[in-house]
Length: 165
Image 1 (tube, rainbow, N blue to C red):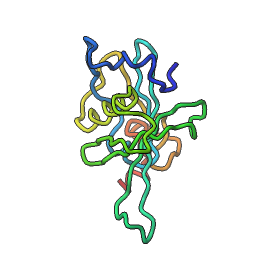
Image 2: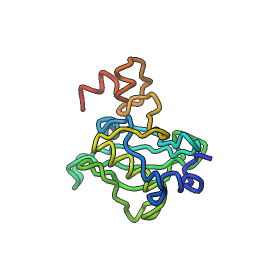
Image 3: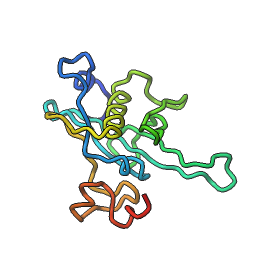
Image 4: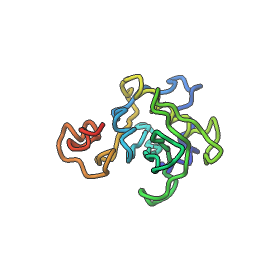
């Protein structure tokens, strides 16, 4: 339950469900693109959830790539730090997920749909509807340090890292 397999959660965000896809979450665009963001989308009624991470990779010196790239992963095992399956690339303009040939989930997979839901709704600044939650783990989305200042906890970014975003 809640490892991201999508089996039980598929109906929780089914666009054919009378409730439809839920609206936004309390994670920010700055948090999602900071470089080390971990967050969970949860159906509070069923308790089912998906945990995702977005990571930023800066181009190496001499690389043909000139801009950073963001990658999305889905937690699929018991190790919250290492058991992530690659989902695709996150484009910062519009917070869009692009599946690639290395993606471990196909178009239409429930995890892909839920991540797109989170990204799209954060981009549009919508609120989380009753019965759903999107939350970070209480660590800075840029450096991974534990957050203790209430405003930093709310933003998902520590005060020092905020200066770099």
